[in-house]
Length: 327
Image (tube, rainbow, N blue to C red):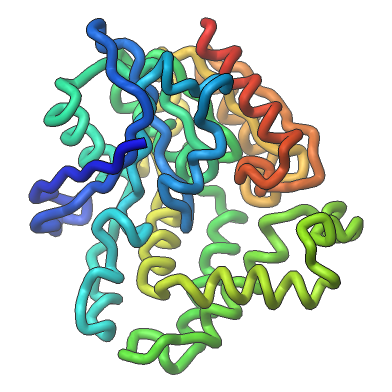
């Protein structure tokens, strides 16, 4: 794996401009002479290129010996340009709104500058990565040959937005939010809310957290969720939440018409127990894509089936990648 960067002044969909916007991206493998083996695999909420690596490697569908796999870090994730890069801390919440339109524009500029604008053999992603992959297929229908959306929708649903608004409210309730102090209480509250959504009710009832070495529900909440979110920057979390809330590949227009533009061979898949991106929501969108098939991931891991934590679910996803690449 090679870590690279691309820097440009980026006009944002909001009307602002990011001066010297930096895209940090990882590359596995090499682009071939025909420039037809590039796979674009964007990151998800709170994740970096490192969290995407579990699906890449020799013998897997995303084999660097066969493909050039490019993993761009999403704006606001703390690696590419993000509010947490601003000093002092109290100024970070003034960071402009970041959208997936901005992510895709920055990624497109990088591909033009560093790869000579190749076709995209496959755009794929999990969660917010799936959102970006979908937007690529909508906006570049002649360029994206295949699309794999894992636990993600083309537009944020009202129920999904309610969850996201609860995260913002938890941060805003901490009096230290937006100051030079770390809002540890708000961050802890965000983690506790997330804990009830990311995994399924059956997963929790079966106490499957014990498989990872946690001794009780309290132990899991403290050592996993509290630690996870207390290590993150509140302004970056805010930026990613706002990106997610504003996600809509139709930009407020006709969603059916926009999804109808997709020419890529498409697979839309989600967990039977996903609370963010439900089977009903994902299946209804898949029906609007002419070359799409829908598939369930039958699992109790909920949304986290796509995180690499469940080996059996990773095998299902790897098989789906392998299958679509044969098309």
